[in-house]
Image 1 (cartoon, rainbow, N blue to C red):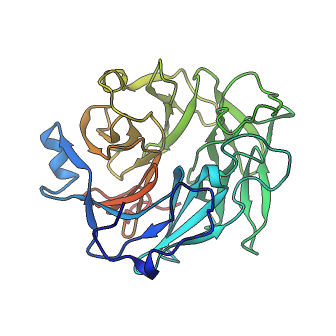
Image 2: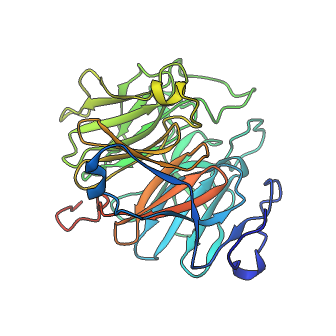
Image 3: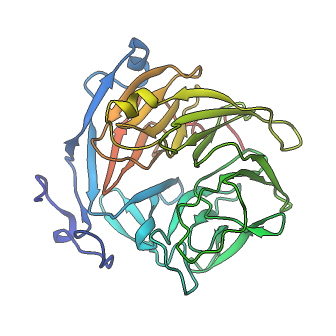
Length: 345
């Protein structure tokens, strides 16, 4: 597939040798990508009329887990099967940021060895959900090695931590489905949990009721945790009211994507981003679903791809989207949570 716009560095091929095709970074003006589905007039307050998604890069195996690093003005994201974390910068395109990103040992026989969800801690250090190493880790100052944040619950190793979010107190909430486990991986925990790791290292189970807990987000007040279930027969987002001691109350269904899945749209409920007004931007069947604070489906960013994750970046009014082999973005009227002046960690 030939790009219709100029390609940076002669469509430079990075060293992800097993990827389906070379990694290609594009330069402005960027090519339009996908469609916007408007289901409710309220969407006009979040996305300007006429705005379009644009394609920034392509050629990844399965892109995931983006995080915006404001100081460096760069987006970091995972290519999970390739065990690589990439970096994208305006005017420079994509290059390799970390290799390996999620598996640093030998003997792994799974298909998704690399990092998945990424986040920043309160000191701006990179946190990674590492499939292959079965832990939540922190990138060390050398930019190459990692320190374990948590790798066990009740003395048992996690399955393969998938996604994470950090609250204003430094607590890390994360999901632990089995997607990164290989055929020979020994499963030590008999369920797929959602957890909280406190700054002192204590790990608390939030819930074990979801078959495939995946993406997650906190509401602006920090009192509710939203978790997507990427289990095909039950594609729901659950809301859990958080208690002061780190536990959670009973979950309730926030959104049910069954009708979208039944309509044949590609993709599962996966990564999420929250805006400052409590609207949830979640990947799901069709691309990115935009949900109001009470779970009403306002519209979708239709990527035409199984879409893994999204995050706000730049000044908080740009949404970056990981759509399988593509890196895409769209300018928004909404401002991402954490970018608003009233938000402080």
